[in-house]
Length: 207
Length: 207
DNA sequence: AATTAGTTTAATAGAGTTATTAAAAACGGC
DNA sequence: GCCGTTTTTAATAACTCTATTAAACTAATT
Image (tube, rainbow over all chains, first blue to last red; front, side, top):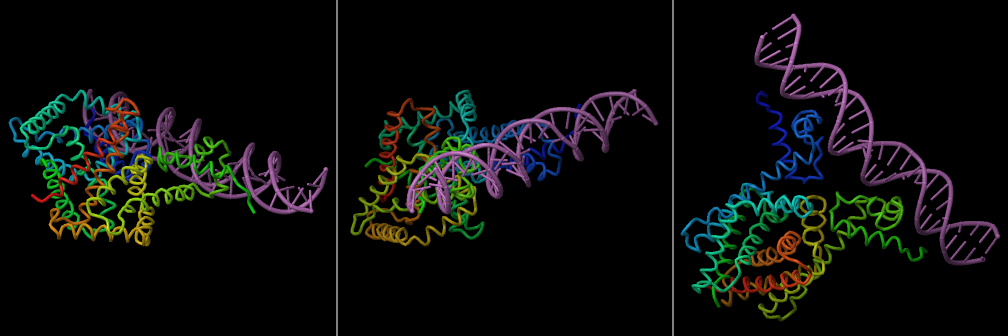
């Protein structure tokens, strides 16, 4: 039996940092090896190909998003609470993985194969589908009750995702231009979260 | 005097397509040459470096956005008309340059140097600054008059940009999953435009 | 201490990259 | 048709990148 392998984990961890920061193309196995403090061949010993190593990391990160996004939509929850918790949850998970939206987006848009894998992951993940079904039901009922203006669940979903994801995607640009330090960045993020909630909740009201 | 050079233009045009489709790193001068139907060395003859060629294209595209975004904010325009026209204008220009948001975002986030150039472009473009100042004034007055809820101009601007830009950034993903043909894509885009307008206008109302 | 399985490295093949250089081709004016 | 300029190409230098291979190292087991 293989004993504990510290370098394999180190490679994974370092590769994650570099791939997330610079993307697949701009990260070489040589870079990873250098930062992990090992020989470049070792990466191929453990993962055989760079693509392999990348896919492990990518799958992990994608799963992370998939699991948490709608998990706040519990049974018998109120529509308003669900919506509020989805936005909170989304913001929360991305606050801890700030480069994730940009990373996922880039690699998905750029690579047909990864899109296919993603599609399968989504369509076969019953938990995720259940969550969305529940969410869909909540929205439809709220429209029927006349509490919000008529709209498709997909539109509301896209509205939320657009506003939240773009906040994090553009954060490196925005913070470099307008924010001085970590504290201001945190302030900006929580300010934006409130604005987004206000916009969405207000925007759902009937005229 | 150098006479008309068709290949130089051809290279620029082909390079634009490839850079926009695949990004800087994933586009080689060999690719460009092949698609332009010329020798690879010719690219260096006209542009000396790949980076040079790229920057010309990038600057062009960036200028395009910068010029058109707020140009609809004319003197003495009503706030509602201005906002509506900004969203229309934004949607319109991106409809004709669908890969632009993703392209600009990627290259700006990935490259410090390009961010610096962009910053200078923005801060020295008096026309652009004037437009934004006018827009800022419109928003502030509308808040003061009590016609909309109190909010920063920057927040409204970010709301609009998030919703519009994300629509186009995610279009390749979304259309591959849910849309069958060009007609459906057009339908989706105009539907989203209306939803975004509704969300923004509703979301600005006072509670 | 010797054996063996697992880990790590040095060396290198092979492909692809940007950029340069010198020669060839094309073209306009005489 | 020749000459000078501009355009275009072939060849290649100098890198960098991924992946493989064989050899060296490490450590646990007998």
